[in-house]
Image 1: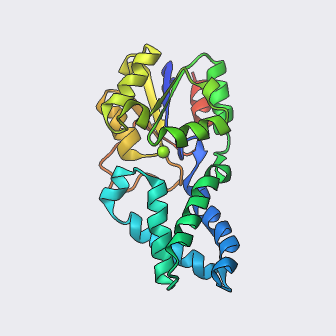
Image 2 (image 1 turned 90 degrees about the vertical axis):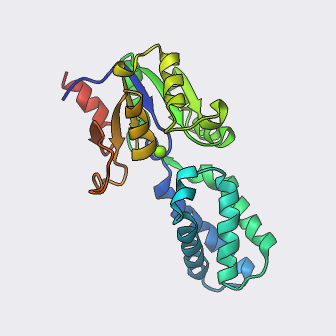
Length: 241
Ligand SMILES: [Mg+2]
């Protein structure tokens, strides 16, 4: 296995922080608090309705691709779940969605070994950038909560530069800040289209973080240069030098 490049670019959500895995448990916990308020004896009923509404909402591929305002999406999803349970209180639906949005960051955890890996790579003198899609307020709040800023020479947030992955702009922005050529850099991320294909398009080697550990889908047209299931594998690769 080849040695790692001197410059490393990292995605944030589901690469450093466990986002997908903590979402539904957080909704379930909120349903337990809210069911009595809505006169529902069984919180599982509310959670089931929410899960259904969530799946229907994100089934739209174009919507998934765009990403965008998740706080608005949560309001639409909870309102839809309430409708399916014949609860006509849309103000309560919005309040529940906004409560989730307010508390969401406190329910996120770091992926095992992720922050330790950043620290170790930093100690080895790697130049590092965080390249994350999303709103400035949300992404900065996560960076702050996990004290991630000291690990990076450069932090690129979609909203702050007006362009997100897979556009070449955030990648080029990070390379310029690190003073690295594309051939000297690796991008690590969980999203095949955004992180892997986006990086490869500008000539950066791309490591796919297979966060679910299910392997590359047979239907994938994107071919990562390397696949890892946990960030500490990056250190093993370095030790083989
Ligand atoms: Mg991600």
